[in-house]
Length: 263
Image (cartoon, rainbow, N blue to C red; front, side, top):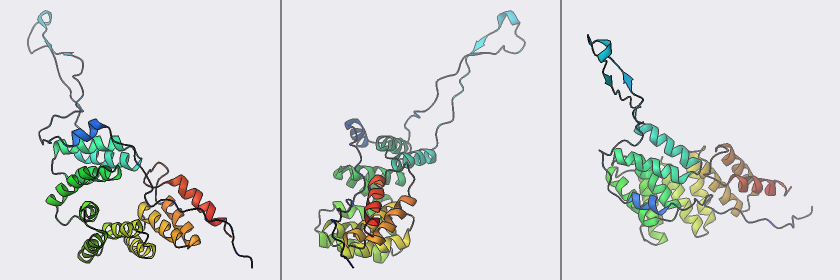
């Protein structure tokens, strides 16, 4: 039996997407104080005037009355849905704006704070991400998404971060975020066997999460488990829509073809 001698292309990077930078205006607006009494921005202008004669008035003295027919404001829940959809499709500036709109109405909206923190973190605005995560934790001290993410910006060394995430896992064994964050911590230092174990635990909790599945594939790829890696790359594609920007779909397709060609 002949050995496989062809070069194995390097696996894709752990972070599957690099969002475009937010505009300076968007970032500055994030630091402005919010108000639960902010004016609605989507109210339609007044509709055309309607002539309505008052009761018993002769027709020749008909009075013109302006009637305003505003549209119903977009509800907070719908804005959050719009923001999340934009985020999944890689429309980060649009998602950012929608989350800020939510905070203008509800300054303690946890979903909006987490959404803004996530976008800021992806774009390397670590100080801003930390501020939003800290606000989220003040509202919900047990929020595993914020707690797992905030350890990355704590300034602690890798061993302390690892310990913090393990403690979080002990307290929240059914939460996917701490396992995923721990996998990322291991992967960042090349500890791929440990990263694989953490990602596998995350996958067991959330098997349809495309990011978890993609990073599991990357870990398998780095460890030379190529056929299994190809399987999980395909699962990551299956669990994300063609419009989604959460994973690098073109790179996943390419890597699947490369690994399957090793037969």
